[in-house]
Every structure is written in structure tokens, then in C-alpha cells.
Length: 424
RNA sequence: GGAGAGGUGGCCGAGUGGCUUAAGGCGCACGCUUGGAAAGCGUGUUUACCUGAGAGGGUAACCCGGGUUCGAAUCCCGGUCUCUCCA
Image (tube, rainbow, N blue to C red):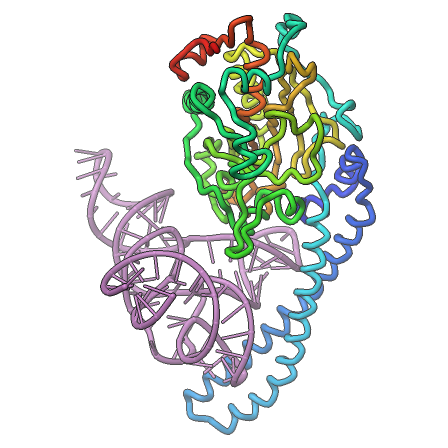
């Protein structure tokens, strides 16, 4: 969440930045700052009372040791009022802190200066488009037809065994899936990311740390019996490795990656958005995460964007990169690049990756800090990106690389799959 | 699922009501010593918040949350995690 220090120092800039999300936070920010002032004076009072009370207790201790019981008892009587007063002040502190925290949680991250103002996807700024988008086949078949005719994916079987949005991958469809994961992990490894296989369920603290809770509670599967949530992305367990951590400045940037299935309830989605592989409740993804020194986090964001570009180029897919406008950006992000691949048959762009810099927004919730060379502690910047999300990549591979006989597998990927064609 | 033992600073480990934010050791940093190094000696070495120009001062924190007490790492209750044994 936004830090109280940043609000004290640059409230105006933050309010202006939030305007780009079409959120007027001025009233809330003022309220928080007012509570902050109140909190500080309450803390000063409380500290003072406790200091006096501690002094008396020490005195009693000394007298007791010296055997002056009478005098000790006399001082004991004096402590009663302190006790009462400090209890009241403590209560007041807690109430103020809770109010502040709750309100602060409702305020999204302030967009970076370079982020455009805007309400909708149309306001996003295209920053790159690969050259191959023109070579489209007019008679391309949609991926769900190809997946069925080539016996790669069984959507109905998934619906029977689990429900809609939980497909089975079969034969070369399963091998293609596994090959893609291996390809992505290999590239992440070459780029210096340490691989993890994290738990697929997380607790509420972790959900809060990366911002899924309380803002997006309804989007995760929740195991109420055990108070656990299915991960919506590997971002959550990977980033939370560093919750409540003090990292060494010299160890930054810390680069992690991991393959996991991801689980999303996707309540409210319907129609062409959920057709085939377009939107699933369970899907596979390789995620890359970085903890960065604030001075270089945007340079690292660019590096991550380049990394994802390299993957898409290896897969020979037409794609474009968008810098999201304020209104389309996720709650916790300061800047986000979305990657979209062209679906030749559906004739629409499909999002396959989202690469973001959260600056200190997650770190302040995670309490992930480093000690600077001057000896002070600072929050790290956190970044992450999909590299990549599988189902829409599979959709785009099938659609873009189809020919009369079947599917051609790009040469960069083929060694990971063990075949270079899928034919009927 | 049942029984027991235990969770103390970067690490090991002492501490069963006040003089303990925490002995001792290890590690680390700086200084002295040395031809150089090791050893030795000395000093320092958690975090958050409040206050102060700064030096400094104050408060809180010994797994988490309650309670007893003038005073809790220490006593009581609940939770949680780890280990051992049993199913």
C-alpha cells in the first residue's frame, strides 16, 4: 500500500497520479493525514504515561529489595491512574491505526509519470508491434476446432470431471504444454532467475502481501475449512518468500521464477471471452519476479519486457506490447506492460503476459526492506511478469502455425516438445 | 487423530517475576597491535514508532493473541508452528 511517509511528503503528486486512474483520492488522503497527526500525538501521550509508570515500577522494585514494604505500597497506589489512562490511550491508538490501515488499503498504487491517463483498454498505448502480424490466413480455423480435430485438448471431458474451464490436455497436446513450460523455464534460467516450485495454496497473510486480499478476494478459490486460498498466480508465493525480510543491498536484484498452475474463479466472465482456451479456471504459467533497488527498478522492468519479447519471437507469434493506461492497470501496479498475441482465427488480440513494477506498494505490505549503504532501511521495489501464460499461447500457436495438414512447431520450441509437427 | 517436548537477537545458547533488550559464545564491522597475516586486545553490532538541527532521549517488541501483577522472556488461558512417540 502507499506509505504514510510518501503521503506526508508528496500528497499532491500522489493525488494527481491517482487522477490518471480516474480516482479522486484527495478526501481520503487528507483524512489519512489527519489521523496520522492524531496518531502521533496520541503516541506521544501514551509514551509519556508509560515512561512515568515504568519509573514508578522500577522504584517499587528497588524499595522491595531494600525491604521497604510500606513505601512500596504507597507508590503502588499512585500507579492506578496511569494504568487506566494508558489503557484508554492504547485503545485510541489501535482504533486510529485500524481506521488508517483500512482506508489506506482501499487506495490503489499511484501510477508512474509515464503512464497515460485513461479509463478503458482503448486508452492503452501501443509501444511495440512485431512485424509478422500481416501474414494472416483468411481461412484460419479457431484453436478449439484444431484442438479437437487433432485430439490435443478435451474441454468436455474437463467439464464432466470438474467443470467448465478445466480442460484435459492429451497426447501431443500435453507434450506441447510440457514443452512450453520447459522452454520458458530454460529461458528464465538463462536470464538468471532462480527456479522455485512453490506451494499452490497460500494463507491470508500472503494474499494481503501481494495485494490479492482484501481487494480481489472473490477471484481466488477459498478453502474455508483450512483458511487457505488457491494461488491465482505464482507471483503470490514467490514474492511472499520475502515477506518480513531484510535483504542485503548487495544481493539486489533478487530474481526468481517458477512454473505453477494458476486458479481463478473468473466470476462474471461469459461469451466469446471464455470460448476454448481464452479464459480458464485453471491454467499453467511461468512467472518471473524481481526484488529490486528503487534506483534501477524501471531499467529492470524494461529488461523483463525484453525477456518476454524474446520468448514470443522464439515462438514466431505476431504480438504487440501495450503500456496500460491508469484506468486499465491493476490495483497494485505503478506501471504495467501487457503483451498480446494475435489470434488469427478469432481476429483479436489475446493477452498472454502482464509485466509490472509495483515500486514499494507490495513491499510496504510485505515489509520487505534492505539496508542502504548509509545505514537506513528502505523498502525494495517488486516487479513481476508472466513469461508466459500458456493457454492463449497454445491458442495462438495452433491458429498462427496451422497449415492444410496440421500444426508446425517453431524450431526454437521443437526440441522441448520432441516433435516439430502435429498432424491429424 | 492421540501423548509429550519445545519456539529467546544474524546464528548457537543462558535466563522461572524487578538491577534483562536480554549473560556467554560464534559471526560480522571498525580500531589498536604486526614487515604482512593469524592470534590477541578494544569498541560496536535488532526492528518499528515518537521526539530532537544533531548528539541524544522516550515507547514497544523474547512465535501470535488475551489474562494475572505496581512490574512478565519468566506465571495463567487460547492459538500456531517445529520435533519425538503412538494410531
